[in-house]
Every structure is written in structure tokens, then in C-alpha cells.
Image 1: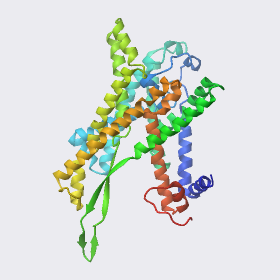
Image 2: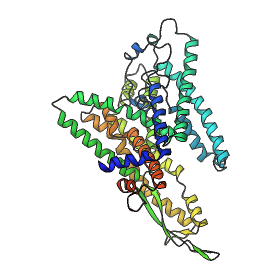
Image 3: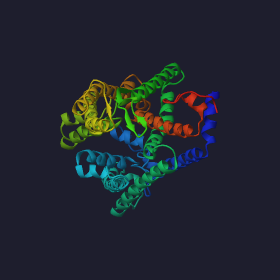
Image 4: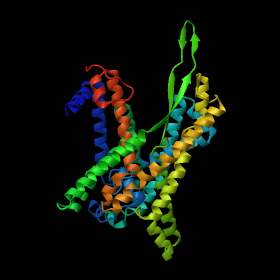
Length: 441
């Protein structure tokens, strides 16, 4: 406890870091307040009577911190921007012209950012139309406001809300701490945790106090497991040849090429869960009068069914290999090593090095994909053993991976500030990798 208190003191002793943390908290409070501002013309009392969202829509609602089910001005949250970013990112790998822009430096990145924002507006327009048509029922609208002008104006408000969330995210990145977009998603997920744990506690009651404690302990170990898998890397020893420049000798050090076990991160689960929306949608669209089609729609809408989880596991494995192949290029890594005079012992530079890295990457990607599958189906297992659906979502899946990833990234940024200020006491308590213990400040 003393180390924790000292750590907090060290963090707030740095003026710049203290201001950034306070700015982040202020921006996140604005985001949370906006999630409770209901769309103008919508009756707040009628929202409670609407059906609870489940499946992929339930995940979207979790990401938005409940703004989706609240029919808020931030109902769509930052998700349209995430969709647009994924599309642009895929284009950078598939289209040479877009890839060339990415390599042009700051000017190229600005163009890609502008394209992403424009695509966000397009995606948000389509999602706003679908959201109002599917979720905002006529009985939820005040009398006399069910008109074309109402829907057009509400579409504009939803687009403005998403763009405001995007602005908040950029301000957090610029003036706060951590990645702004990721922070907004994380705070939306965490905001649902008190509600979920309250529901779980009430469902257990006094007689179920001990099982409830066991559930919390199990959740703790699940989080530790996810942290371990997220941080796991396969280190390939790389030797750099000595180079004489003037009167000095450079190189000759032995370094490592770290290949992450889950190089694709959370993207395979996001892609897989996005695709999982299609089977029930298609089944209900093409066969409203067919019992078989309706049964398929019901089966693939239930995230605890074995059919749903089997298809989800297959998609995660496929997308893990696909996204890893897009995000990690062994040929580029091999060329960079060759340019800098680096080589892997026993492997010739060039194509042999590229093939070696590709082989190692393939070997570690498959167990990484299996770990992602285990994390993805943990909420279904938790729900089947008697844990409420709201609380089961926190036992794995996209939510837990995003929270763990954002927290680790934010901690690393805080550590970098402390390293610059030489807070060695924090370095000892935080056990930051790559630092050696010295005398406390």
C-alpha cells in the first residue's frame, strides 16, 4: 500500500503528467454525460420498454457505455470511426497507391486521416438510418414528430455526436494520456461493469455470497491470463555486424526480434463477431415464414449455442492468420535487418531470413489463434455455468482484450514520463521491463 501511495505521489508530482491526467478525466466525463443525453423528440420514459439488445448489438451497446440503448446523441459512439479505420488500414495493405501515401510521412498520414474522417461520415450516415429504423419505434417518439424532417434531423444529430466523440478522442491523444479512441471505448466498457456486478450480486443473494466471491477470483485470474497472452513474444536472436565509422566501432551487439504471439491483437475477434451478425440477419430476411430459417436465426443469435461458438472459433482462426499476414511482413523485416547489418545466426540474409521469420510466425500464430478462441468463448462458458449475461461479457471476448490492451498502453506512457523524470522508486514498484533498479529518488 505504501508503494502504491508513493507511486501516485510520484505521478502527480510531474506537472505535465498531472495536467494530462486531469484533462483525460475531464474529456471522459464529457463523453459519459453525453451518453445520457437522449435524442430530441424521443420519449425517455418509453426507452425502458424497448427490447434489450443482445448479440453484436449488445457488444456495440457495451462499447458505447449504454448510449446505444439510451437512444443518446452518442448512440453510435466511436464505432463508425473504427469501421472506417479498419477499411483504410486494409486498403493500405491491398492498394499500392494508398500504401504509397502511408510512406510519404506526415503529409501522407494527414491525407489518410482526412479520408478516414470522410469515410466515417459515410459509414455513420448508413448506420444512423439503420439505427433509427430498427431501434427507435414510433411509440418512442413524441406526438406529432414522426415525420421525414424528424428522421433527417436526427440522422444529422447522430453524425454530429459521432464526430464530437472523434474530436474528444483526438483531444485526449493530444492533451491527455493514452490513445483517445481506445480510451473512449475502454471507458464505455468499464462503465457497464458496476451495473453488471450489481445484477450478479443481486441474482446470487446472501446464500450465493461464496460463489460470487469465487466468480470474482476467477475473473481476476482470467484477466491475468489475458495480460500474459497479450504480452507474450517469441524472441529471435539477431546479431549486428561491427562497422567502423571514422575512429569509432559501431554494432556488434546481440539484440532480439520480438514477434508477438498475438500479432493481430483484438482485430480477429472484432471481424469474426461482425460476420456473426450475417447468419441470423440473412436467415430472418430470406425466410420469415420458414421454421428452419427462423430456427437458424435463433441459433446463431444465441452466443451460448455450440453452433454459434464453433463458427466463431473457425472465423477467429481464419482472421488471425489473415490479419497477421497483413500486419507483419517478413520480407520487409528481412530487408531492414540486411540494410542495418543484422543477421540471424545460421540463417543467410535475404530470402532465407524472410522464410525463417515467416515459418516462426506461422508456428506461433496458430497457438495465438487458439488462445484468442478461448478468450472469445469464455463469456459463453461463464453464462452457461450460471453467471448472468451482463457479468459474463467481462470474462473474455473483445471487451476484456480492449480493456487490457488500453490499460497496458496507458501504463507504458505513464512509465515513459516517470523514466524521463528519473522516478526510480516508481520503477522498482512498477517493475518496468528494461529498467534496472537504482536508489530511490
